[in-house]
Structures are given as structure tokens and as C-alpha cells.
View 1 (tube, helix red, strand yellow):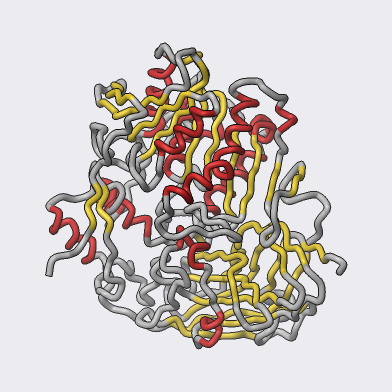
View 2 (cartoon, helix red, strand yellow):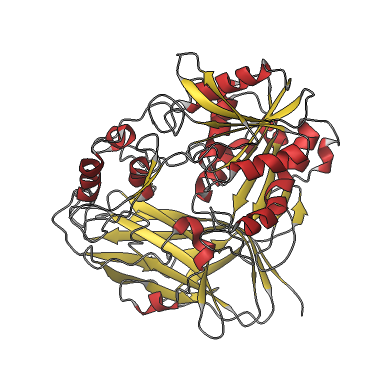
Length: 545
């Protein structure tokens, strides 16, 4: 049986752009489209992406046309090794130097006034940070969305501390789909196959070539420097509009960048936050799109999608308004319209609230000390609620059925009598242990409606390296801005797997990708008393009826 996949070659070039093959310093040429907003020199928006600069997935020609209508020249470039560009398809490590060279090329073109901004989502948000690290003087502002400087980073067992990140399955699959070679190969593993890595080897055999990025990471990870000129946070600050999605599965990386930025005065003064009720694919909580949006849906989406960046660029690339005209923080309270404004995140006028875990309850009173156990069975894993974690809000899965599983601990709070706003960070502090050599702990906070429907509010997970001894784990469930309706209640799920979004533990200590032997482990959670598990939500406001 031959493995099935969809081969996606470059789309036809856009009639609205002129393609150039731009030479990098090592002689490799990158395919680069130029969209002109008239014949006068002006600021340029650079977009460097691996998803085809004219492909339907990222609809860059539509985006470029919108920027052009607002007076910006646009340069869209296939990154090294992708689609029409030359060179090897190697994740992350060439984007800093290539970004600098692309900006340098722009500054020598007749359409350029020497001022460049960058825009884009996910990997083409990462390419902005890579370019920032090289400190090209022409780069004056960036607008990275749903991304991070650690985007796609594979956890390492060498990371310090008793815990580390849990491995996302996409980390090893992405080099075999979007970064296998110039073109894209879309395929889905058989998640029940063992060893799991045989799916990847069969794919390589079927297409007749391997992925250099996959072989760099597996079976023995080789970490190449992403930023040879130094980390972006150590570079000269430039104004940055950070767009973060409450339901973006990559948001932890972006929040990590935010906390680094606020530690540096220059970056703290240069950063502006826009926090939206969106997922990675820009589905909005109140208005999700279909899996393949129509051209009409895309056109309708453009103002909401691009106007904040245009407003930002008008200030920092064109000096059309003072910097004070851009709020430092704009955030949507989920289930409400519009944005709230504050000088910092979280807002200064909120307070902290703590719920303590009991047998099956979330209570604001500490219970008697005790232990709860559940079994992690690698042959019967807790399924991921969404088929596509990147488009989570497109599905908005009802997670009520997960509460009936024996391998999921469930804790319910009392229903709220008035609408309650949850605003700020969410952390689960827990002491855990396992009969196995290691364990993963997944925590999900849910909004449970009176009819029993349960929908995600926040989530987080952590890998405990040596689980045979009791370990104190602070599980970061991210940041939230969420309105809990009257009559609704909070629920907390705790489990040891979320598959296939995350790679689980084999129970034997063997890497799950290559494992053929598995063992069930009994997991322990300490509740009650002075060290019992407790859920801290960074800010809560109750509204009067």
C-alpha cells in the first residue's frame, strides 16, 4: 500500500507583481515579488514566508493589494529552499542573514525611500524577529502575529529544571510536510501505527527523498543557531505590534517573548500588544470561518486582519500620528465585542483568586490533605479534542465527554451567579508523581454551561523528567480575557495525554516515536493541606447585574 499525500507545487505568478530573483550574500537567489503603490519612493512592507508567496493558503496577493491601496509598496519573498527560491529547505537557521540581505536589496530599489516594515503570521512572523536580530538600520517596525522566537522548537531533555515543555507532534511532522523540500507535501500519519516514526520513513521512501530538518532533529537532536548575530531581544529595539490569540496553540511562545521584552526598558517602551479571541488560523470566537474560506470571506476579513497593522505602520513608518495614538495594550474580552485598553498586561485594576482542588471540586477553601490517582495507558490515550489544533475555533469542540473518562481527573466549581470576567494569567500549582520513569501533566480549564456543554478557556501542560519522586510543577495555562456568563461554572481537567496533538509518554522511558514496548503507569496528584494542588487565575472581576 502506497502512502497517500497531496503534493502542492507553486501557484501561478500574480499579474499584479513583478518577480525578481534576489541574490543573497552566498549567491543563492530567492524568488521575490514586488507590488508597487505608484511610481514614487515610499515605505515598503516586507513579507518573508515559506508557504508560497502567491499560494491560496496565505493569499499574499490579496494582502499585498490591501497594503498597496493604503499607499505601501509590498515585497513578498519565498524563503530559502521554498517554492521558486533556491537553496536548501532548512528550518529557521537562514532567516536572520537572508532577512538582512532582503532588506538591503529593497533599500537599493527605486521604489524604496529607505524605510522598511515587516508583517506576517506564524513562520512569517518568526522571519521578522530573525531580521530584527541583525539590526538593519532600514527596518523601522514589525507586526508579528501568532508567532514567537522559539516557534516550533523541539524540547530537549538537556533543558534545566525538573520539568520542561511537552513535545508537540507537529514539531517533527512540519519538516516532513511544509519544509520537506521546495514544494509542500500534505499527509496525515496513521496515529495507531507502531512505531510511530515508521509513518515518516514510509513517506520518505514514497517520495524518494528525506527532509534535512527532520534528520537534524531526529533521532538525535542537533540544535543549530537560529540567531547567529544574537537574540532579537538583545538587538536594537524597534516598534513592534504583537498580535496574540487567546486560542492560538502557539501563543505560549509569543507570551514568552512578551515577558522577555518587558524586562528590557527599550523593548518595553517599543512593544504594543493586540490580544484577540482568535486561533492560529485567524478564526474568531464569535465568527469562525470555514476550513477553506471563500474569496468573499477573505475580502471581508481583510480590514479586521490588516487595519491594526496599517494604523501601526502609519505611525512608525510614515509619522502620520504620534506614538501615543497607539494604545499599549488592546485586548478583547472573549464573548464580547470590541477591545478594551490598558497601559499594561494584565491591567492594573484586577485581583488574584485561588481555587483549591478537592476530590472532585474546585473550592476557595483548603480541603483535608489527600491524594488522587489515575492511570496513564499508552495504548488508550486521551484524545485531542480538536482535529486541527491550529484551527481550534473552527471546531470549538464540546469537551463534556472527556469528564467521563477514568484517566481524566475532573474538578468543578460552583456556578457563578453574576457574569464574571477572568483576566490575566492562569497557573496550576501541583505536586505529582508516577510509577513510571516520567510523566506528562495536561490541565484544561473549561467553561461549563447549564446544559452541560464544556468549552476551553485555558490550557497548559508540562513534562516531569523524573516522576518517580514527587515533583512540584507550576503548570502555566497561559493568559486569558474571558467572560463567564451567569449560571456557568469553571471545570478543570487533569490528564496525562492529549494525543495526537502532543507526543505522549510510552510508560517505559522509550521515545514514543520509536517505542514498540509500552507500560501503564499510575499517576498521583496531591490535594488539600498546605501543599495541595491549587488553581490561580491572575485576575477576576464580577459584574453587577
